[in-house]
Image (cartoon, rainbow, N blue to C red; front, side, top):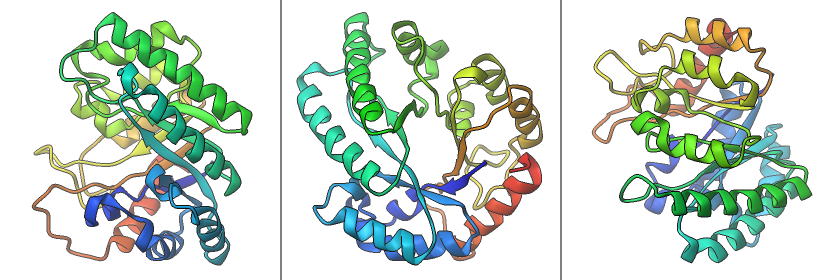
Length: 266
């Protein structure tokens, strides 16, 4: 079982959320934290020299690239050509640095998506999935709140159109979207190949590190064992806009890694 981390908490502090200029720091911090790998953001794979840079950092810190997150308004046919071209670049470069997972967010529409928009979303997902398979990469659906709100209108719309698509749920976004993570795992366990992990406090605000909130990860761990989950798990810390850290981010990652091992067993 591989446990990595996603660099969103770093991106949130950077102009335009661009982590590329601080990749060395991110790799160093995640290595220090005892993580098994890193999930990149797709923007880090856009620069022309990204493959060379990321390969060198992965070797320097002995930290494999698990995969990358990726997002776009897949429901909007007018954007399909540009999104597919971006996905082609990112998937090829991801494969070139040794990554094997591709977590896709399908984009939020102004209103609940229509059947036509869900059809368009599914069509592009199939195309991106085929591209991933051609490079030995597995696509999974990564959710925020919008996919699972309104009785999971968006996610169910995708699942009805692509019955075999794999899932990479963010368990905290599930909770914030009104979905019980334990019930979700028990319902969709056979599809789940990837996890995003984060914690929040009783007041609904994100905790600084995992284990400092009150999400029931003991029950979540039990559910994961019941469905025999065997994919990758990634810690994705996030903090409220006015949050002031009490410790270096690398230490929060290290604490979170220890909590995952203690509570989930991997």
